[in-house]
Image 1 (cartoon, helix red, strand yellow):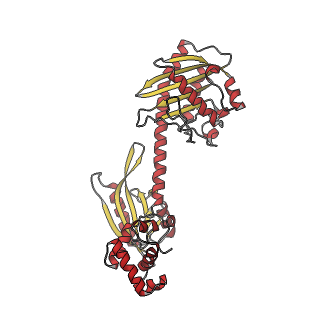
Image 2 (tube, rainbow, N blue to C red):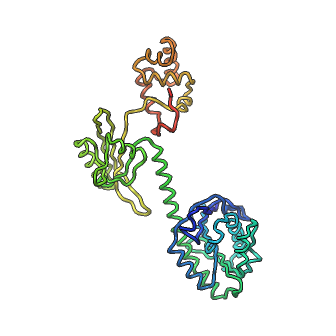
Image 3 (tube, one colour):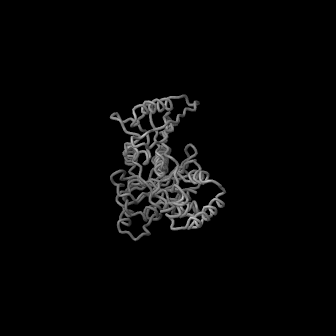
Length: 398
């Protein structure tokens, strides 16, 4: 399916007065998606000036530009040039894209065709500003070409009172289309990278494990929210004056730095990993797990170290997990107290049960979960709990 995005951002005028990147669900006559949900703006300020200067040479006041890239799903990108006066009329912009699709559909194998703007484009939204905007145009030119597998199309608008496009002008405006395709492909690549980065950040921020990507000198390339919180606590890890990551324990800090350096500088084929203990002054401990990883920016990859800090296994589990294992609400409550208690008797007191009833609950829970000893039960629960932030899910015993 072909998709486009229409940007409704209030920053549109500041970033990019003339280019509107689109990707959504307005349908063309063939049922292809053309636009509906708000998308995003790409700052093409340098490209924008080039386009304006070139189009001005041919007395073109506005243009609709479209490129369908030869990628999976045939993703389509569109730019509206010179539409800044009606940039907030999103409905009108969508309608113009639909109309442009119909117009391009009439080209068949022709390189270009001329038309009277008033015969093709009209305002169906009832907006006075859009009607005034369209009334300012007289002649139009629709053009298309193929470039490196991409289909590139444009609709050019001239103001009233100007002549029709000459054959030479039409040819020149068609020849410029491959340059637009290159611009659109670059913008699409940046968009995908930005979206991918945002998704990965959101994913790692959801994880409760502290995770950092570090350079050879232990300086952060990426940190999730759990690692930032750990640095704020200053119990196991701290940020040094030079910005690098260190342990609060000076002896362990040396080992940490060396592990990070080795992981970030090892050969790509080498599997470098190290696990060691991090101690806190209050007696609590964590495990530092350092492995080699790759940091990617565009087409460039850089060797780095991935530091994961593990805490002792959890003894509680989300209600949904235990429901999936077939435990009743009363059994879930008992299990939550039992795992946190030192004895069956204490768990019975905490639950308001007799010891005999608590013993019955324990037998039922063990039978449903297929274990026979308390350590097996605790290990099973610990292994099933996802490393997600505790505040995102209700816990047993809460």
